[in-house]
Length: 609
Image (cartoon, rainbow, N blue to C red; front, side):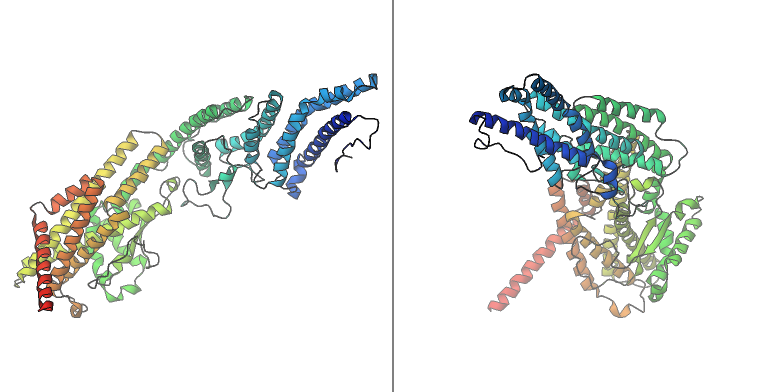
């Protein structure tokens, strides 16, 4: 029994010389190592028992594969013992030095194997693919016999790795009962069509072997997730042909047959598989998902590409939205008006509009700005500010249009809708001033004209310079590729650019704040041409409006100039040129600055007097 260890002392063995006792101890130490390793393999390779008991810790398919590899790897030791047994039977007086000579090569091997099994038994993170990392690290050894055996152990564990990898990249399934693979299923997050490509499966970074690059792991994640998409619904044409699956199997068999893992070859094979899957996913998006048609719908509805539709809708719904009893109205009322506006314009395909649904959100659900709101006392209570657009995302487009993406589109939609309403209100005010016989204050007319010019130029900038230009670039990128990942990156870039150029992210939010003030002033000015008894008591004096307007103009121009100088932004420079092509706003801002300085000096002089 070597479970508690054994040691030979010179005083206890009078027949042995001191150096022979030392030799005996070295031989017994090898025996103790072998006993520990054998005990480990007997316990950890019984995978059927482990499945039911989940004991011992860190047990699983990789530890079982390690045990089978150890069984095979220790065969030379057992053969050596049989050989020595024959020699001892032939020569009972065989010296210990000869035993030591035959067992010497195991002096370097067994301590390393003992260290490996001790790490597996005691370290919680050394399990599954973590065992691959441990074996790979220890195999960097200069002793050929030890190095070869550790490579055999690594290859034995790689057999489990390739089985799990094959299930993932060929079928989109994680065959992992012990939590050992670096792709894991997220059990506490329900899977649905809004979750995107990676919602159900995630990368367990702790299980990634160090000799596999993270970009390769991400590619593996993409391949399996895409194949999972292929199998999640029925489609008219099979995107992943059987010949491709057979090709993938051959590639994986080629990797598994190699005696030594080659990271470069592994990455090359994964890259080939990724290109094939990305091409099939691209075809699935285009054919089954009708991606180009959906993008056109997003442009028409979320980005107000159908200006005539929203003009008709705003005109018919404005009274209901502004009325004091609007709080009692539901989503169905506004959607009824939206559908009515769509049919009035003679659009034939009602399937398009039925995919979208207007809905009211409360303040807690409204897309929150990232910058602190500037208080405005001239805001008019309205349900327009709570109006968002929902879209019924169908498989497989949920990969691109996740709930987060729809939310970003809604931020842009709410901003554009507010700007459109202000433009319509100012145009209505102009129509009233020209048709009625009343004499209007010239300052009020000039202020309306100035605000309308500003809003018109912002509209042209947003819809032509920003939305139309970036949308055309997005379509061009899609035509130039057949790779899904390229399309996804192009769409993410498109949405990020829209957020930036429409002042909905980063430092540009400060510009959006002053645009909101100008929009609010535009509504207040337009209300002076068609007074409302409910708000007449809250009318803001014209002089106050002018002061706020020119102050907001000056700050907005300053913000735009800073943004243009920092980013060398040609679009912002183009907007500044359109707004201030004759230097009017610049001179106005300078005149106001000089006026304020003069006022400050006079006040300072009076205080000293």
